[in-house]
Length: 165
Image 1 (tube, rainbow, N blue to C red):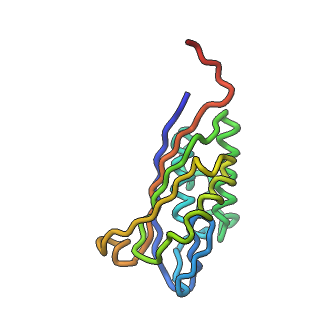
Image 2: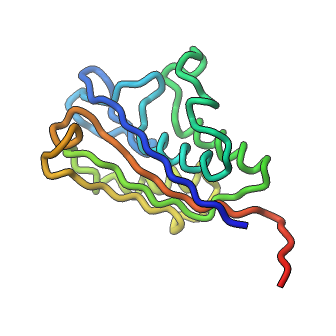
């Protein structure tokens, strides 16, 4: 059995925060994403896609921003916890395809490291993780550099399932 999930996340850009995407700290003139955790929109979108595919809710249900335990939390650690939840339900991650929407900074130099982090956290091969980045040609809140957004889709596969032909 296979299941598909979609995730979306957005955070506002503010001064005085680190910019972390895909578990990678990206130099950005002391401008980063505002959030209770490290505000990694890419990993949050991926976590929501995975949880959604398994019908387990969303990242806010499992790691609420009202819980001080998750203040400044490392989203890579949260993603590994999501994968553990999936494993308990008998799922493994087949593949992930994600897109970050950001006018700046340029993300191409960091994409491969993001993919490695995601693959490691999800216990899957590197070539099963796709991360892309795009601008919105100056349009909308991402185009005006007010925030960064991310979309992710994933495929989950049920492990140890007997198939009948």
